[in-house]
Length: 222
Image (cartoon, rainbow, N blue to C red; front, side, top):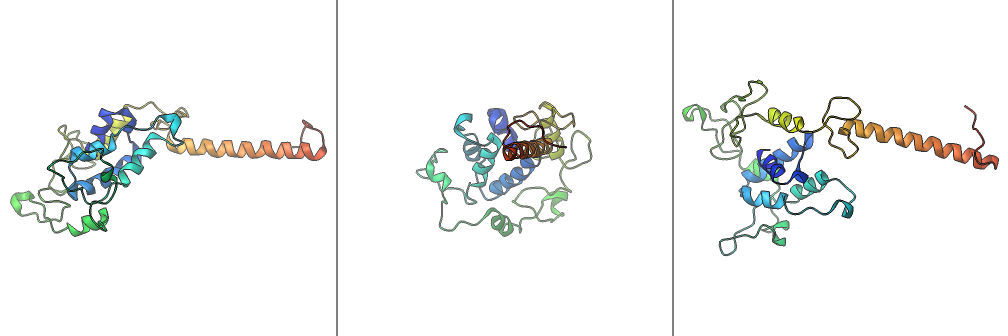
């Protein structure tokens, strides 16, 4: 999640929020545990996005698809270097690469080195601390341990709160962060789409009734 937040600071169009940020943050954590270099992942995520008029979806959807298409196995170095924008990075680097889930499952033998090496809980990668051994959130929220990659010592929940605090609020007044182009949060956006669909259906029914009578614009009965 910290890596995704760094990407957002480099390019605001790559900003992810809410559940999507948490879900993709866990996916990126799996890629890092599988051996991906953070710099290569950042280069993949922050590659130039298409112009808004060239796509019929959101920037967040493009970033999500881009992250999920990254193969679990990192690409092998060629002549000691790898060009982040090389098309080969979008294809499996080895035959039949393992999925992120299988890669994480295969690495559960790593043990937490906390409590002077006496903890022993399983962790995704060597050297990582489990949630019980990590430092509490520096904000004192009590919701989770500090993220190891964060110099400010915030937990995931506080990182999300910090990201949401910089966004405008939903125009419908629900208090949630506005993450849609219409100025609404996702729940309110979907509710409004439902209302718009119902209104369109009513208008179609009125038009069909008027056409049936052969008189456009005749008031319809309640």
